[in-house]
Image 1 (cartoon, rainbow, N blue to C red):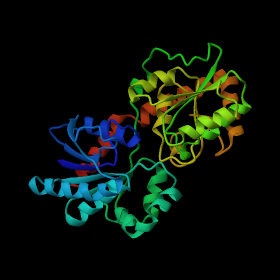
Image 2 (cartoon, rainbow, N blue to C red):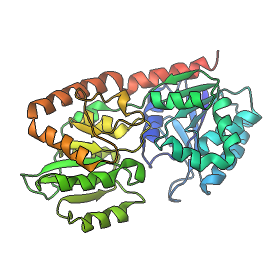
Image 3 (cartoon, rainbow, N blue to C red):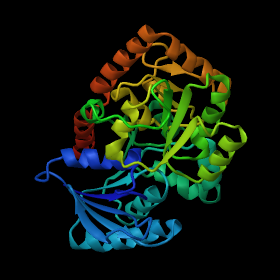
Image 4 (cartoon, rainbow, N blue to C red):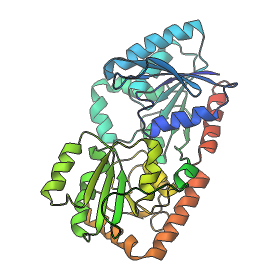
Length: 368
């Protein structure tokens, strides 16, 4: 099968969606599947075209709003030269619009839509309201929809999707995150108890609430923030104003291959999200052997059962975060139970081999 992928971002820019594409396509035999992928050249420094694994990546240098149109025009030319068997759009955004345009011009080509959205639905609505009729057609014209969580599957239903909807989550390379690495020295000393979060520094990830939770915790509790984003300057200023500079380290961008070492050097993973499609970072922390504190929003309840595979804290409540951190630091036996349960759950339900097999069946189904 020749499958065309539309994704706003792709490697080397890594998020849950980008990892999913790479892990799934790597596991689908080149003798059975060939993938072309259109994406944006986000920093203008990447190759215009290159082969990454089983995917021919073609990058466009243009504003995001132009991407659906330019990607479709380029894809139309390729399709006429060598027809595609299916088009696969990652998220109901720019990639979804490109898939919709392709479906409109080539209605016999199956359109697979994968929902990976992490922003709140209210945020998505505000961003898309001025093209709402067009936006809703991404859902109604799709032939098959996959969603990484029950939360996103329910969203597709609310958007009047007519296609079959399958919940196929993102996964984790559990072995890579569990493999013992040399621990990082964050400069806090041996007595420090370290909270870590791996997050884009954006509003939805609740990093400000996490920083503020330190005011309710002992001084030996420190915070390592892995990631960059639009709120970094504001969060650094907030840390300074709260007098917490000695307890917080901004580690900045860390290559995905090095994240396991950072996780294994900490005691607890916390991300008090305001919204979440699923949350690969939580699953990675579980695989690395960390107890997890999260909020009961979006797709997180799919894998976090309070008191069994992790702990829930309240949304926008630094004191609630601190309470759960204290519980984990004060009860080592309970912490070990949570870690063991979460690790077993990730290995059984979120392994990439099973996820790739499920996506293979989706693609095969489109040919029937």
